[in-house]
Image (tube, rainbow, N blue to C red):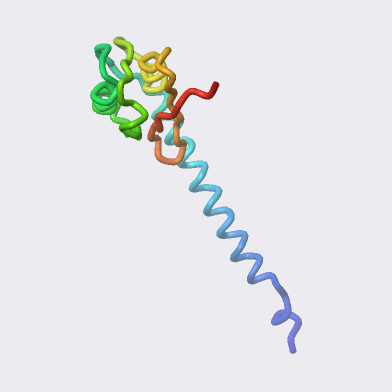
Length: 117
């Protein structure tokens, strides 16, 4: 049997190609998320009930917000206005509400969660 038939190199090359492709995709996703995060938007969000305020934030920022209804029920957000990044606007909106936003770098969406104690 030829030595090349016993060599694991073809398998290693395939694994290496897959790893490099995955790494490039991950880097591209992170670059896109960071670029979106540094973009400033004009916000004009009045204080009010969290559910409609978060929907309005989503429209004005162009970013998806995932917030369970039970979590945001009976929560009032703060007013936010000005040229801000989405993360800063959302942080200001949720200040002192017991809620915080977590950014999913892969999708650029914000998930609303309880502020850790």
